[in-house]
Image (cartoon, rainbow, N blue to C red; front, side, top):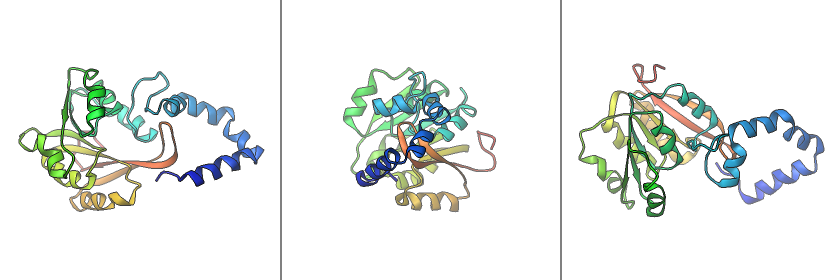
Length: 220
């Protein structure tokens, strides 16, 4: 969960008035990691990018590294909540259907998306309205990314659109508000793989979770 302003000020003050701690923080090893992951440009721009300023998801770095070794051009993706993740996945999978409820953000990236992405503007009053664009399709997806509004409800509904070998990527699972969705997935027979740590431009611990069954497209 994000730190409050008071907690952030306290943390910065602690660094400034404890020289040894501050020195360790900016030492070559710590600074090197921040640089090589692209954490610093992500922090400055407010958008998740890697060292080469290429777009990446706002997942934990551990999750991003894991996904780079698992994604391939045979996979079809349903993304709930578009962003830099849309561009990241589009380069590594066959196709993406991405739902976006923010009109501003939808218009921001609409003309930038590659040809293998279908970006759909959708309503946001209820989970049913949000998922309406895919409720009439028979298509199923190998990967479903849940990083949007109504996450618990979306997890429940989206099982109808997941292939037998499909996996679910659920971001920010460190938040108590998503415990309901996590528990539902486990009851449905999914195993979970948690990737906890820092994320692009963020210096608090968060978690990205992959839900999967024994026979899955990632072979995990």
